[in-house]
Image (cartoon, helix red, strand yellow):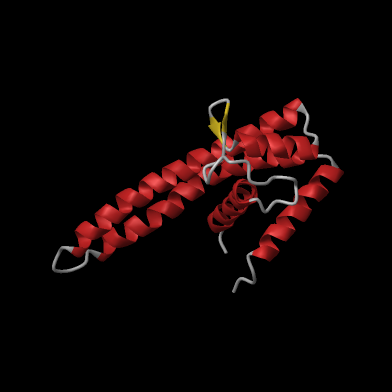
Length: 163
């Protein structure tokens, strides 16, 4: 596995850690005290940021300091930005791929470029996302890290075995 693939996988895992926490919050499945709060599937809005109810609950459950809250918010912002960019690209790629399929012969080079462009975005953006997640997780106390690990292990177990 080359370095860029490892970076992309690490970025996805980091996004899964905090992004999955937000999803669990909205579905009421978090052992960290998050549950249904009437915010719908997009979560609540506090201070103009989606998922801020999750951040508030996580902050309360982990007893985060102001600095840790700031780092968590920064990590969530980086992940939101990356998610928005990949969603936009997915729409564009879908339209471009449909256009390619209209031609008599599939332009394989262009099709491959469309597919690999998402990986390229992940390779480019993963370091900043990982740095933001690391800044937050590195600031946690051992007890806070244990709570996050327990939640993450439970969350991954609830998804069933992956092959």
